[in-house]
Length: 171
Image 1 (cartoon, rainbow, N blue to C red):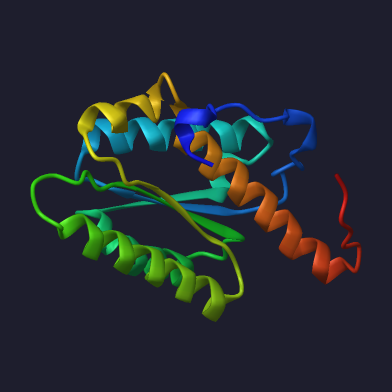
Image 2 (cartoon, rainbow, N blue to C red; image 1 turned 135 degrees about the vertical axis):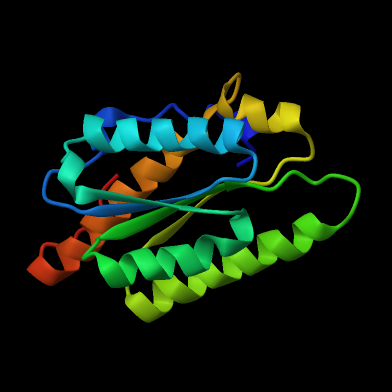
């Protein structure tokens, strides 16, 4: 669903499992720092809000969004994490560079998820303009950092539920 039709920060808190026993990684791109740091803060705060312990949140910064998969792999190799959130922002601009970067990052994170058997969450904004990015980094469309954190919590919980044999589908 397009974020123009949904606020990225709106969700039913009662449906989110506790993050108390989970460990998370957050990899943040330094490029477009004004935007990515706002996404990071929202992600971090949302993890804490749902019970994650500060000591169980590991953070790494990488130069740009293209480096997110490599940084995520390094972080996952260094720490025992249940999910890794990758935060970046690739603004379209005047060339098609965004298509190459966005594809590489999405493909890299999907591959890491398959190889590691754990979620590597795509928390990357792919807007046409800086204004659209700001709208999704705490502006009128909410904050994708919240959405990415909620996704990480839910996916980490899903993985753990398979190990415990308590997997269920419920709405």
